[in-house]
Length: 109
Image (cartoon, rainbow, N blue to C red; front, top):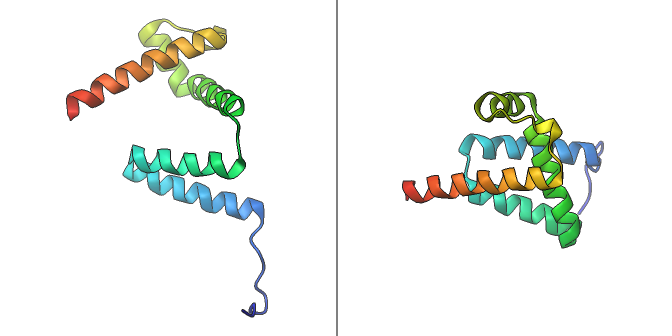
């Protein structure tokens, strides 16, 4: 198959931009199964081991909790300063959030 003149392979940055656009579309639809499947494909494409995945999950949760909107919400509603939480605190908070989410999900079913 011939490449057309001026055709170039997408850079990693361009591919990441395409990926972010796809994620934005998923966000609009907010299909948790589709989002989970996409994340799983990324995880397997990168060949992450379970310890690396655990570290990535922790990092993602920590970063999400420390985002200004979430940190403010938790401080106002729970009097919780997320910047003071260590690994165990973040994991306990994640466990609580998962419990709340799954209970809410079960009620909606």
